[in-house]
Image (tube, rainbow, N blue to C red; front, side, top):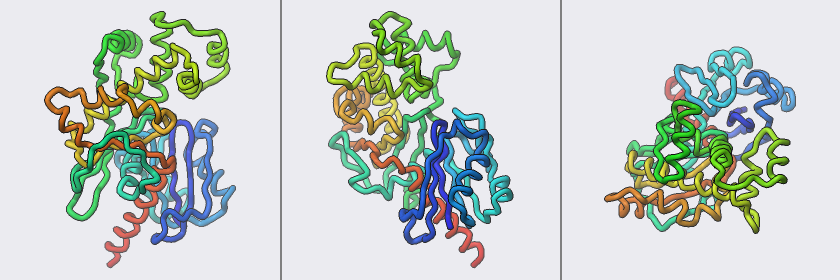
Length: 335
């Protein structure tokens, strides 16, 4: 029995499969609110109580950096340790990887139905691939070709310095510098970032906040879904629509940045929970203009395909293939 888990700041998805030949045939799966548990061990104990089974190998993909078998979750006060999980749950093989590494790991296995293409670029076989995923935070990863297959690698590029490209963004950058000190792309290009942009535009008096919206936002701990929904109504709220347009412009600019830094002629893939929810707005110039607005490299960026990952379980799929790689390595060591 093989356990896979996608551990995020908002929710944790888990699944179990039993055949290395069919990693997508899950016997059972479950989703829990991460905030309802004080540790991964607490959550995992609940899952195994709900679904009693002896686990032989497990892969946990987590929203945070993984170093030396230990991981912290950027937006959750958990410390995750590989050896502790092995000992506590008596699992022979355990691996902890970054969640965007897992999403990237899934990319070569995604089908046409898992993707929506945003432009007319064509992937170059064997070229690097960029993956960025705005969810609760902003995850980034990449893949390179080793001569036989693509290999996924982690990155914490979402915490690199945010670069403003419009007058509105310059004002926002100054506002957040005073508030946070360092302003990363995650501060303005994530679920948390959407809430931050809203607060800036409201503070600056860009547009009036209607009473109905203020009341809704006061009644929730997560304003992002409300803002996104209000921005996409038949008659969108002006404040929320500007927030979403600003988010989309920043996402486009950072997608283009990654394509250049990695020379990602194999494609740019947008994961995370937000892009599929705003797909109609990503098809326009609000995204594509800042994506390709890179001076002398505009023509190159036109050749790079950009995809939205529609499969919400992409990270779990990547974790399943990570388990298979782990078992193959263990078998090779035995041989």
